[in-house]
Image (cartoon, rainbow, N blue to C red; front, side, top):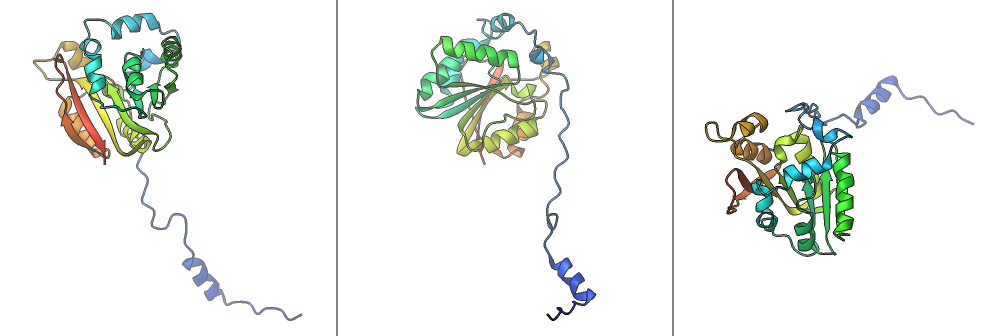
Length: 240
């Protein structure tokens, strides 16, 4: 048997250089996002969290989000069969109106970082006979939902709790279908006007939220007027 002639070293080198590599032309990955408010969610991660205490705090008549919950739910324009995520669902204030809007053909992902709240949301959904409600434990930097699984998302008094807003909103962008929308409700933060608690607790005002969210792949559609709100604004964004 005749042996094959060996290829010159120069040709071997040229061939290797011509092979595509995994890194060739790849854009550098973004550096990990730093927390914008370390520790802000420590209370919710406490396994000894008292749910009854938070129900009283979140669902009291003194909280305008509670008194205007039906108008806020209506701002999403949910339709039967829609899949919606309540990001930062907490004690489940919006479970009933969202489930009624999407019907049994849709889904309501009750998303939260607190295992204790998630357990409570499951109990509440069963007690209210809402099989379309899916309690979903997320991470601090991601909603951790499948790609293109949502039509709408709702973030109520929770955006200022995002430690990693860029990463979290990127994961939500991925989870939304084409034409998907996000409604964000949060506190007006105006020095000299807002309560001291708001100024100390809420890291940014409305314009900063708009600037951030639009830089994360969304466009502002409108500011939604909701009668009865004095401390909170409502913004509708569309996936770009």
